[in-house]
Image 1 (cartoon, rainbow, N blue to C red):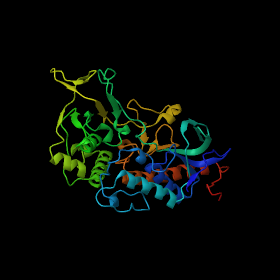
Image 2 (image 1 turned 30 degrees about the vertical axis):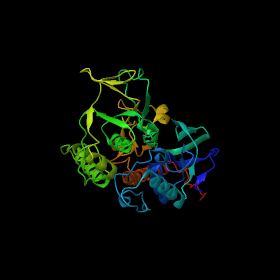
Image 3 (image 1 turned 180 degrees about the horizontal axis):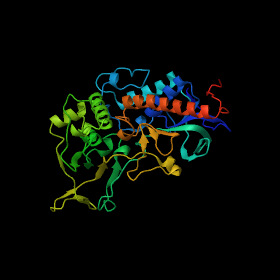
Image 4 (image 1 turned 135 degrees about the vertical axis):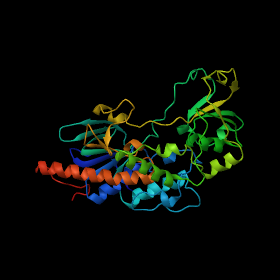
Length: 375
């Protein structure tokens, strides 16, 4: 087992604490281990795999396994696109293969700045480190819009993060809200189980059938490079479409099950209503309305911008250079919320950490290097 006892070391000063043991945190751990730095990964979950064990059963990656690997260890191949269980098993085996120092369950409550370190306060004690990598992702911060009448609806409401499988909705009238991948996959998953109505702010935009996650990552990377070079913004992935046509979505689309209606204007006690007087009764509403960065533990640092993000140079916080943010979306790197994107960003992050620590040690010869295995 790679998971360690969830108790803080007393008085020790680590090179790095990684907050989050999902794909981004493990990718950081791979490069931190290779760099010989002293580090620990604090994970709030009781089992390996990050958010993947908590996602809906039919969820599929957007790319084949050979294009969805973390650094150093290829994901085992599987027919078609890997599902959530395959990904979760891969992440657990990855953690074990590299003997990464993951402590769980440890819930990080706050990160505070000190003159010579960042103090990481948790429900299991306190850690201190010269640098912190925040890799908590977005899954734990689902976004529910304040839509008129939401509190009046007497049926069931849930975010896509709480959806697991279609059986509880068998025979019910379900409205699915949202125009992205989650909505399309859940509508497809409900086919044959529920009377489903899909509503979106604008008509759904399906990507070409031959475009998968690998192509999207390349497009996002080219866009970032162009913007850094001062070239015209081509729109990146958003210019191609919103929905990757994985096999279940393609099958539902070809059967005519993915026709969407415009978004309703309000909820009622019995369902939803549009401004033209049209009403639709329903038993449940599934909100596929996205996520926000899970950054509450960083609140004491006072770094949040108006849009909820933190200003970064690459993945390094501009205002607090000892803090790095990994895996939150394009604002921390092209495709950084994907397996392959997290791995590529982790390499640059650890290189930046190594440079920062080297400059700190050069400035203060009293600081000595140490690793988690006592060397």
